[in-house]
Each structure stands twice: as C-alpha cells, then as structure tokens.
Amino acid sequence: MKIAILPGDGIGPEITAQAVQVLNALGESFEMEQAEVGGAGYAAHGHPLPPATLALAKSADAVLFGAVGDYKYDTLERALRPEQAILGLRKELGLFANLRPAILYPELAGASTLKPEVVSGLDILIIRELTGDIYFGKPRGVRECPDGPFKGEREGFDTMRYAESEIRRIAHVAFQAARKRDKRVTSVDKANVLETFQFWRDIVTDVHKEYADVELEHMYVDNAAMQLVRAPKKFDVIVTGNMFGDILSDCAAMLTGSIGMLPSASLDANNKGLYEPSHGSAPDIAGKGIANPLATILSAAMMLRYSLGKAEQADRIETAVKQVLAQGLRTPDIYEAGTTKVGTEEMGNAVVNALR
Ligand SMILES: NC(=O)C1=CN([C@@H]2O[C@H](COP(=O)(O)OP(=O)(O)OC[C@H]3O[C@@H](n4cnc5c(N)ncnc54)[C@H](O)[C@@H]3O)[C@@H](O)[C@H]2O)C=CC1
Ligand SMILES: CC(C)CC(=O)C(=O)O
Ligand SMILES: [Mg+2]
Image (cartoon, rainbow, N blue to C red; front, side, top):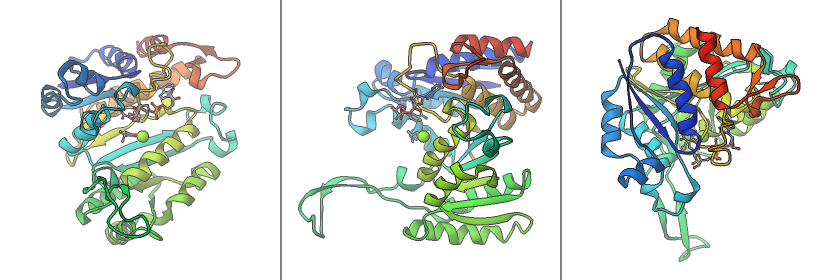
C-alpha cells in the first residue's frame, strides 16, 4: 500500500515526521513517498501544487498531509499561494466529505476551555462538505461595483453555491455515519438569510426520508456556534457546508483541549482519502519543536481505518495516544500544572513507545 506524505509548511514537516514514525512502528510494509506541497512546492517547483505532487497523490492509496501556508507568500497572486495546494488537492481528488471528530480524552478535561461537566464524555462528529460552497464558487474577484449605493467603486465578491447532488451526497454521508453512532444529525445552515442554505435545508430534509431511524434537526449556524460552547454534548453528528464547517470545527477543537487534538479525514465516494490535522501551519510556533503532533498521528489512524482497511492498527494508535495522555505527557497547548511538558518529537517518541 502506497501512502503519499505531503508535509507542507510551518509545523507541517515537524508533525508529519511524528506520524510517519508512528506508522513505521506498526510493523506493516507501507510504501511511503514524500513530495513538496504549499509554500515548499512553490519554493522548489514554482507552484504550490506541483504536477508531480498531484500525480503522487492521485496514484497513492491514501495521502497524509501536514499543513500549508506561510505569511511570506501572502502577497503572491492567489493562484500561487500555499493554501491553493490543499484546495486543489480536495477538488482534484474529489474529497467532498470531511470528517472531523471532536472527542475529549478524559485526561484533557482540564485543558478544555469549557467546564469539565459540560464537556466530559464529549464525542461529536462534524461532517463538513469540502469541495463546494463559497470557497470554490465562481465568479469571484475584484471588479467595478455594477449597481447600488457603491456603484463605480471597486468591490470584492465571491459566489456561494451548492448543486443538488453535492448536498445529497454529503447528507447521505451524515445519515449513514449517524446510523453507526447515536442516530442524530444536526444540519447547520443559514436558511433564514441565504438562498443556498434554504436549498440545502430542503434537500437535506428530502434525503432524510430515506433514514427514518435517524433523527434530524436543523439549526442556524449562529445558534450552532453558541450551542457548541453552551451544551456541546447535545450534538451527535453535525453536517454543514464548507465555510460553516471550517469555522465550527476550529471552535469545537477547543472543547477537546486544543486544535492540536483534532484530526480529519477527507474522503471521496470510494473512501479514498487525504488525512490531515484540522489546524494550519501555525507559523507562530514553527521550528520551535513544540507543536502538538497528536492531531496528525490521530489522522494517520483515521487513514488506516477508512482508506487502508487496517482498523486494528488504527485502534492500536488510538490506544497508544490514550496511554501517553494517561502518562501525563503534554505539549504546551494542552499543558496543565501537575503534568509533564514535552516537545513534538518527545510526544511522537512516547506514542511509538506506547505502541511497542
Ligand atoms: N489545511 C491547511 O493546510 C490549513 C492551512 N492554514 C494556513 O495556516 C496558516 C496559519 O493560519 P492560522 O489562522 O494561524 O491557523 P493555525 O491553525 O495554523 O493556527 C492557529 C493557532 O493554533 C495554534 N496551533 C495550530 N496547530 C497547533 C498544534 N498542532 N499544536 C499547537 N498549537 C497549534 C497556532 O500556534 C496558532 O496560535 C495560514 O497560512 C493559513 O492559511 C489554515 C488552516 C488549515
Ligand atoms: C485553506 C483553508 C480552507 C484550510 C482550512 O482552514 C481548513 O481546511 O480547515
Ligand atoms: Mg480551517
């Protein structure tokens, strides 16, 4: 089985190295091939998603991705910015279903921003549509404002849109996932304001007719953000669009102690996937050896489970992560008094030792 390893920028290479170390410790014979992506792709080949990197991602059975982005590229024209690499990979590989489980490990109850009684036992699954919405809609750009009170001025614009089949397929993913859990789906939208999301609500309601055993509720995104920090355990599966899912999942991350704890799987219709932490390249801590590698290590576990048919090995990694947390090891983002502060590499080494 071939895994494409795309470390990217910032903390990407640091955290990916730890996940690779963990995969190597499983005793499986994975073929791993690494390639530059993001700012690293631009620096080496003049493009954030070099053709050889895309070809590798397409030919591999699964992709393990670090993160992309570096402030030094923020002035480049948009098509050449590092973030285009991950957007391009999602689109090119058809990775429309983004699964972001927000699970609170009991040892991290004190690291969560919420009171232990509000988050203890938290286990929610955010399903974010990943290849549509305003992140991909066209037209977009900067133009002369054609009408209204600002006519003649320059205006920036983007296009929010969802095709019916895009909504149907992500709704099916959500209802099917809920069937394996607590059988409750909350569809998050902004149907009170946006045509796109009234349509979203209508289609999700229609798909729900095929899942009578699953409970469906609709919630506006502003309320959902509030409920996530008020009573997050009321959610089981949240399904939402690309932008709302992006924002709500960062919010949910803090319930688990840190964004460094939130893994993700981005899947196509056949469960071929790209696996990456939900966070970015964290330029503020890059090179310091203090980034939390657990979201990436847990993403590797998701890769074993969803794309590589190795559920037992995925369980082993998740058990090893629980063990190092029980040992009291913490990177600074999840550190509390009475625990032991470690760096990225020490955390990775501890997971490897726990595996053995
Ligand atoms: N999939 C991707 O590659 C993503 C890329 N980005 C890009 O990353 C760059 C930085 O974006 P930000 O908005 O700062 O988001 P970010 O997620 O990189 O960082 C936000 C905050 O969380 C902290 N953080 C993130 N991951 C951490 C980890 N593993 N351990 C400890 N602390 C961690 C950072 O230090 C920072 O304070 C930008 O260029 C952005 O476009 C952002 C999100 C996703
Ligand atoms: C480039 C961004 C869309 C990446 C991001 O924020 C995410 O996937 O969570
Ligand atoms: Mg994000």
